[in-house]
Amino acid sequence: FRIAAHLTCVGADRGQVDAVARRWWEVGVRRIVALRGDVPGGGAWRPHPNGYARAAELVAGLTRIAPFNIAVAAYPEVHPDSPSPEADIDNLKRKQDAGAAVAITQYCFDNEPILRLRDRAAAAGVTIPIVPGVLPVTNFAKVVSFSRKCGASVPAWLAEEFEGLD
Image (tube, rainbow, N blue to C red):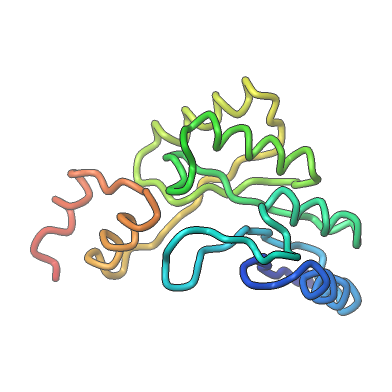
């Protein structure tokens, strides 16, 4: 069977992250979702002084350790820390160039942002598969709250579908 893992670079130095990755390779982990990660408790992103500052650096570090199959994040709507959609695409291209094999998007409830992301990525030379992220809705109020924090929109039609189902 295949073993996969999720690795973020928040709060850890490169040596710590690299040691975890080496151990995972030794025990059979071959697939990693590599993320910069969210700041615990919110606030501004500040990388560890001796850590991987961005996901592209994390991907490059992992590929130096072993030939992992690495998935990264992509954003159909602008990442909350990004100045623009173009910056998000540039960042995705850097992650691909560092060794990412696939991108998984932030969840999105409409097709159009996913299709625009796909087209912009292709125009920028991104050739790795882009897989739409899915978020099962079990608590609509929590989805709305989380969406505000991560920059994902919740369309009116979805709110109407959940109206009165509290």
